Length: 214
Image (cartoon, rainbow, N blue to C red; front, side, top):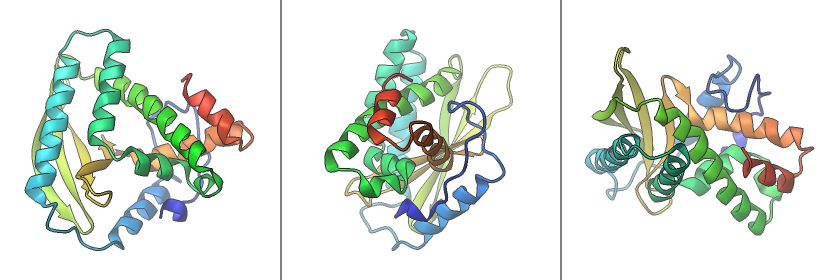
């Protein structure tokens, strides 16, 4: 499904959250794929999508206010991703065309390594919200999925929004994308994982090993 997205060379560090101008194309293509899918079933509606993200945000606020160490928070964020995010879909989208030739065992190993990598990466981002709060303010349908809008308020900073994309296409209500201050996770991850795979000579097993260390 996600193979329509073009590989885009990464610029700077793979942990960087900024999108290049060229990676805007990935955002558009990812969106177009979801727009082409059937409308959500009755199992998922605006209220259910918002309810899911209410739970996610409540858990995020609990984690950032817990006073736990960084490593403990990363574990907490991984549990959150496993519980509320469509990790297999996100992982396959990030891997792109390389997922076609991956064995079932490799995809399972990649998804496991990737969920840890993603939890640490976005856990560091959410840790910046310590001392602040996140609040869900709106939700709306966007053809084949729902967008739930939340606002992060940090001391001494202008509030900014986080947008969560929710679908039930895997059989459960789960989020499959986050947009933080305009940075689209699906698009940026596709770029960064593609660049890491290239650096490993296209060897998926080496990429999996590297993800476990980042």
